[in-house]
Image (tube, rainbow, N blue to C red; front, side, top):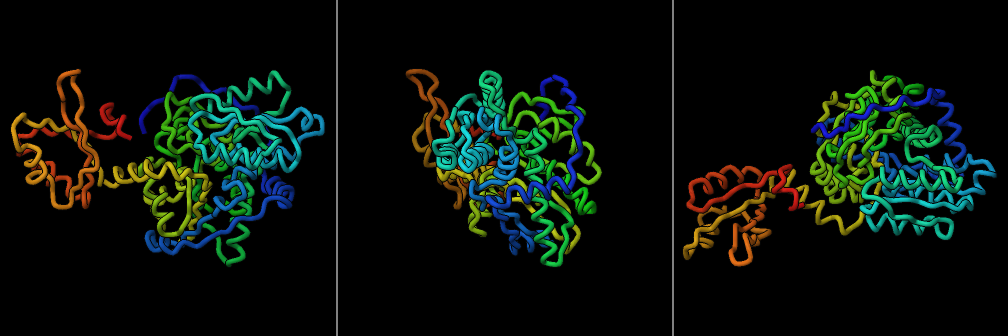
Length: 434
């Protein structure tokens, strides 16, 4: 994980009452009239692949296609009459916004919801559907943190209540109802969870799940998985408190949070003995999104596939029971081109080169016949201009038959008169390609 942190020191969160299993169970009773339990689905493919029993907690099947409805409804439903009259504001990358919108419509409360400009259109449209006339959508800022600042400024001026997406006790308790359902569903099958794998953004879901299992099944290991491009939890643990990342990769939009919540950190830090934290690349997430779609028919958004992507970096004893939370399914179909691209790069099947062809006849034919392998396909070819009159190198994108074809390709390039320079992910030259 690259160190992209600023050097600010996290403010100490106010000491709050611990979250107990009884709090989660009360929330479960509170929301049960409007939020139905989601399935716990056995996954034969992943079970065989990893030598354990893998169950998928299908939060993508919520009415708003995300677990976020739990915390949002639990928070909004407990507002006083005066707070309801003043309305609510919320900031979100999309899923929490849909939960708040749903709660506003159900409870007839007016709300303004702030989302960053990179929020997929699919999520914006669903916010409007779930909120109807009760919700006004505000698109502000380049990321969640900027949208959140705008929402708080609105609340300070208007007197509305901020419905926090993760850094709030009632929200965390609501998210903890996922854990209560998992435990109940496994018990009905005569099983118990050895490990529960949880996606991590701001930390609310991880804090809620950890709190419930700490009381009800303390032997269960809890594994938090965050995207490598937004690993705010690992940064917080290294800093002994939440710290703001300089930059995040916005691709895993449901978990692309610059700063972990203060209250989630307090809960997580107290439970480190039962927690294991890791991060996975955005390319690995894309690969699992495609696998879930092609094999299980699950439309997972990037954050929704985090837990499954994390399985490849974990070791379990044979036969263990492992639950992966599929946290959301709000994925815009227009993003699948980028999803496939990132997956191909991650699997070593897609590579880019700058190719300087000698100004002699037949060089392109030589490249095609003598350098490319029989299963190599050109997926992109464009000349880059040096200036207004002169053409520079060609940008060539290649898709290989197998990842093992790369070394022979590089060897043929090295032995050729044609100058070929490979572009590598993470370099400035590569950044404009995806």
